[in-house]
Image (cartoon, rainbow, N blue to C red; front, top):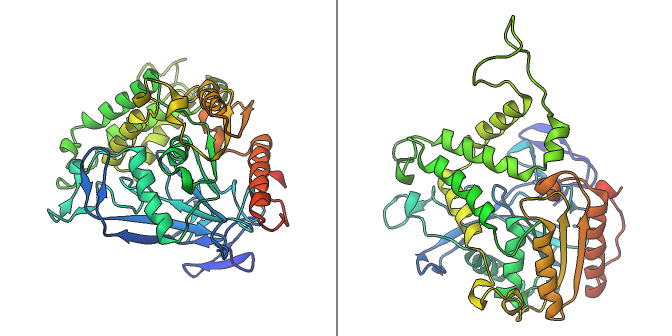
Length: 409
């Protein structure tokens, strides 16, 4: 919840809370003792989910919105972390009082997926049967498994039906999965910069990243916890490969071009393989930072779940048939320079939904930032999302918007 003033105390230090922020937030850890049957046939005996909530759940519990995260994000969607004043929620520009997803009107739940490494049960958690970290023995996961775990979370909060389930990238796959797996429990599905399935090229990028991790000498078959090591080199390379795919060619050219650092004294070139171009420095920094906080087994699990997602596969490749039980209204947003999940993939979903005569709003935003555009401040993009949530609010009879903040201010 947002504090009543613009200043709050965090670890005895005053922290300024900007307008439109949900304020200083802490996660809640919610345990589920009932075993979770997974698509793989394996069973997770019990699990815990890390969750943050923003706003107030109304009396009839009709104003809840579930936000699903992408590969390397978490439950910390908005606000300022109580444990680190520099840790701002990954979608803070989207979620908050007066923002596109307005917490003055909606109760927003951010959840960390099982298998992740930010508080929910994952490979680094203790396996109750062995008393040791799960490691490589952690069960294989799919998007459908995440949806089932999240449905139990909805039950915990007494939410029969979400006003909307929303996500970008992998989070968008989860939102789409919700519409198919729990069609009676989601009113609207907001899918941003996502896809109904990965292309062979995308699977290839994921495989290169996984091999970088698996072949790191410190990986130890996934049981590096017991060896008190971390496959940092592999994680760093995986992040570098992934990060390149999140940016467009134009965006990288604008940020870095062919800018070089100062050459070695007396020469035009370094004549070596150290950092010479600024883009090299940037990628190495991103990779090394990533390797300090992300779990390698989690990276393997989540990228494989990305690969597996293909709801049309069991329907002879017919996406419309896969979506024929869907009841939700849809908003889909894509970005012109997103070559990882290009607009053509979103249009496939739109066409399948229209074939089933479902209500669909589609926006294709001309933005230069590539796949990462879904995380950035773009007035047109945020206006589309805000307008759609205003429509949902009217359907539910929620109070009128009283302020407009964020990138639309």
